[in-house]
Length: 194
Image (cartoon, rainbow, N blue to C red; front, side, top):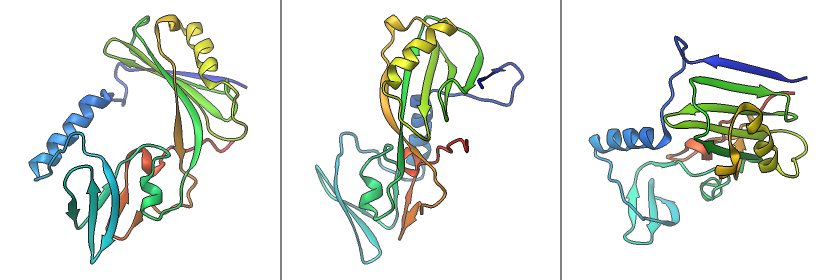
């Protein structure tokens, strides 16, 4: 059974913001409280010693009392903090400028135990697909590329990207001494029950 839910943005309780705009806002808020932004700084290792986190980087080391790890889904920070690694599922996304509009679309049922959704952007739409439980589809990118044109998207000019998504299984700690996982590293995507 398939369910397609369309939510009109006009007078709805939904707000959307571009990820880069939101990231910039968060950085500026952190800088107001004394945070320092270091571009092109790669973490080489971390160690918790005498109640202080020591972070080895590709330049000078950094230390602090607390560590917030906002890494990617399936990234190395979870393991480095000694926490249980999340279950990963497959997902894919594409952005297209071939259609415009102001509605958010949710499709449950086209992909077994997963979803397809689309969100408007300033200059088009962003589409995502994920298989969250059970068998992994053989080619999730192809599934999205075949689905989006049914909704008016021209995928011939769009790049479909595949990437992992972390799932919340309800049995993981998100912290260790003086540290916390955030963002995709925290695996807060809630999988459908069925």
